[in-house]
Length: 160
Ligand code: SME
Image 1 (cartoon, protein in one colour):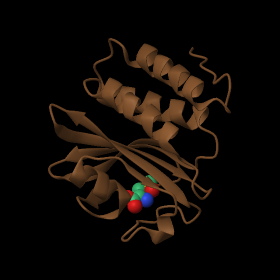
Image 2 (cartoon, helix red, strand yellow):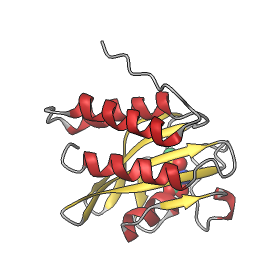
Image 3 (cartoon, rainbow, N blue to C red):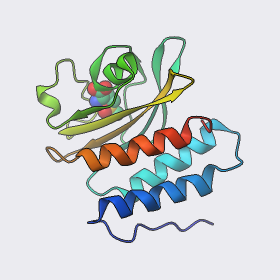
Image 4 (cartoon, rainbow, N blue to C red):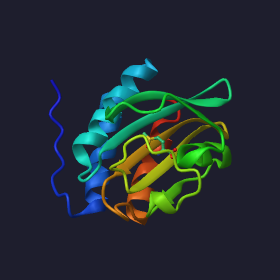
């Protein structure tokens, strides 16, 4: 049994340092990508307050396909360039959206979502997946969240 608990929700750099250490410990030496994404989705759900969806979309044959997540059932396939996830996958860059209703083409999987952070996972310069975080709060995510999730994406580059 694993019992990783975030120590200080208010100290984001410390929170992400712990999250990264936990993700490293859980995925180190495990070759199964689904198992690793499932455990990291669960960690994200447990560590990050005020999120209603935390998980992965994988790049499969040129489109995003739903991966392991914590949250409500979500849309299964997202074409490149569509919505926040599709924008991150098409550009290979993080999308930090303070108000999803102001984002052209945002895909509302859960009507409660108000802000979103999507970080691509790159391997050898190619997008292999995206990490998607949704929150029911406006402007829930900031540069510290972005830096933390980008570090997580780098860690997972060869583990998913
Ligand atoms: N809102 C996302 C779709 C995925 S769900 O949030 C889980 C988007 O616009 O890409």
